[in-house]
Image (cartoon, rainbow over all chains, first blue to last red; front, top):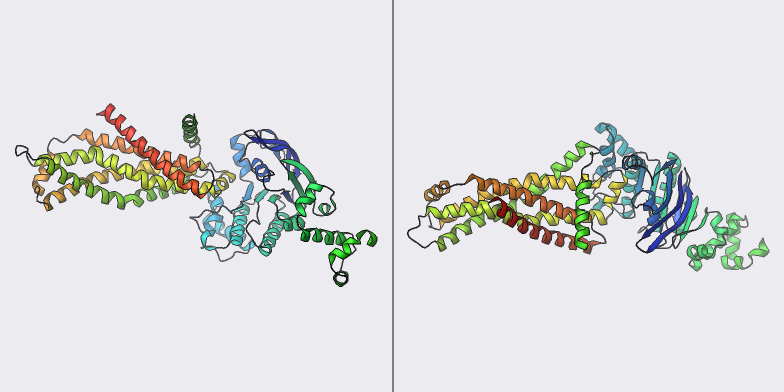
Length: 284
Length: 245
């Protein structure tokens, strides 16, 4: 579990994070959402110690990152895996070397044991057989998966993902989301994901923190977000008519009004989701 | 003001390199890799420059020494001393500031922009000691060796140009090389080589490591690294000559 307590951060005169408090739960995919410039990346970089907070505390299972020594911080970081927005793979290394790098640096395992672990994680992210390829030879989705493999190769307790779906098509995004979610559950790790991908919010948002202009505006999960009354959050999430319709459909589904294919067919026969939504209260 | 903050940041980067390596074997591997990159990677250009530098030096010295009183051996003495004292350490290092300096700044800049440095930091690796220190040590190992090679090839280039151009025979050239030789000049050249190697590698690392922005800034950082290195090399060259010779 990661506790964020009253964290504030400024760059010069500009206050980016304003007294943010939240809890990132273990075994769950914790999402930080918000518009561009809302402070998601800064918050995540504060959480991993790449930025120092101006005030407040970040506590990893009782260990306070903000007050710990550099040595303790290095030790803690070995329990952290991170997937970067651009994957941040080492260009000069092959897929295998990228994934093996943390093992080379931090373990005294023999080559066979290292290779077994590398092949295990590559198989887990469905990249078996790509060992000798260079990052420039693989697709964006594959790079993300190599990034995930490298992040989890040391079996971290905490996994951070910065915009894991940026630049990916919706189908590949879903695969990446599913993979991160499965890995989180399998290994019971605390996963923190920065995203503004609504598919991710709906699919894997087990614990969601919505930032608005550096403030903690809303907290909840993907079930609660459907019924939330927060205007700013609704404007952010359901920005398009299509998403508004999708939300309404999901609400009906959550309320049990449409729960099987037959109902869906009926709705479509009646003229689509909008017709149904206009009459939502009556149906309830 | 910006100059002082840059000097401060540079000194902090230097200080940050001195930590216990997370894995000595990996650091050693990186040092060897950088030594090969800097040393072997620059071998070709250094060889070509050195040979022609010596050759041109021999031809131009002969052109200027028109007095019949001066023995022909003087030409090889002048070539030897100019190559050892100035051409090999300074000219070669200025070229290396371009070749090696831009490579170091570009490599680190790209790693910074593509978040590779952040990825290493997150793993708990001190990037200053893992990325910067091997480059500086690699340069300190290989650049003086390249300068020694440049001395040898430069003097050989003068010999070849002298004999092929009918300026002086190879025997006369060799005899001149052995006359009035001052061993201190070689030590002085090596002191210069070490100093310039440190300037090239540390200044380029500093600009590359601290790149902010995108691809444009990487190019800009490389250019600034090369310009700053060249200016500092010339400044250090003057100071070393003033205090040591």
